[in-house]
Amino acid sequence: MNGLRGIGLGLGLVALVLGVPWHRATASPATGAVIEIWVRGKSLPGEQGAPHERSRQVNLDRLRLVTVDRFDVQYDRKGQYRGITLRDLLRRFKPEASVDLAILHFANGMAIPVPFRDSVAMSRLDPFIATALRAGSRATAAPGTFPDIVKKDSPVDRRPIQFSGNKIVVADRWHPEVSSTTEPGFSPWAHADTLVGVELVAAAAYYAQFDVGGDASVRAGLALFRQSCQFCHGAREVGATFGWDFVNSAPMSGYQDSAANLYHNIAYKPTNAAEIGLMMPPLGFLSEEAAANIRRWVQALGTTSMPPYK
Image 1 (cartoon, rainbow, N blue to C red):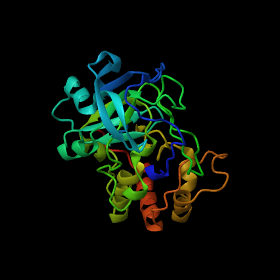
Image 2: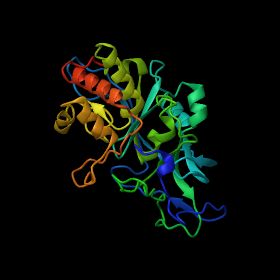
Image 3: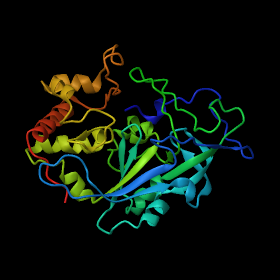
């Protein structure tokens, strides 16, 4: 995934000037101002997917929204937004004491976990769900939308990041699962688009689903999954769907033929990557050893039943 520094907004994309009309985010049937909040239900041994319990549809426009001046790492500038903090939204839902991780699901399939009971992480990220942005009169975006984010420096996937109904505004490109060595070139917030759901889980039980034991290399692969892969990829329909499922996707098997093959797919991309459907940007910060460990973990995951979520 490209770092936020590699995302260009284009000249004259938006001028954040006070005293001009609000640009309301547009709504669509799939996204819009309505998001779903649910508690992850228990799964049975061998069951795939993530059952929903105590699910609620929330119309953001019907909540008490606030106006704040916030720095947005995706736009790399400060703006005036109207919306609600993630903390306040969850407070309204009243999550059980047993859950401590909010997995933010986005329209493009990304899934970004936020430890919402961790005061340090919440203070540093300060997640805000914005439904409107006060923008300058010379904004190039059509009225009623958040400006697109144009990925000028991405040789693989040049599709702009688009928003419909809301956008997550975070104050820092940091994420608690991403190691400090990879953070300069990697941030899961870079490609987040419209928030469509918030899944509440117990972190230990959620990550235990991906833990199939094994030797040190398998465990190292699991750690790398949490640090770099989980935001875009899931396994057996658990987790993100932005990229291929690590177990259920047939194309993944070809890249697991050898550690070298998987490494070259992770670190490099052919010139015709977009034409053949390889949209994942090159992750040059991962080594050949790291790719080998990920491969060992994926192979173990694919040949072992995932532990059920309890």
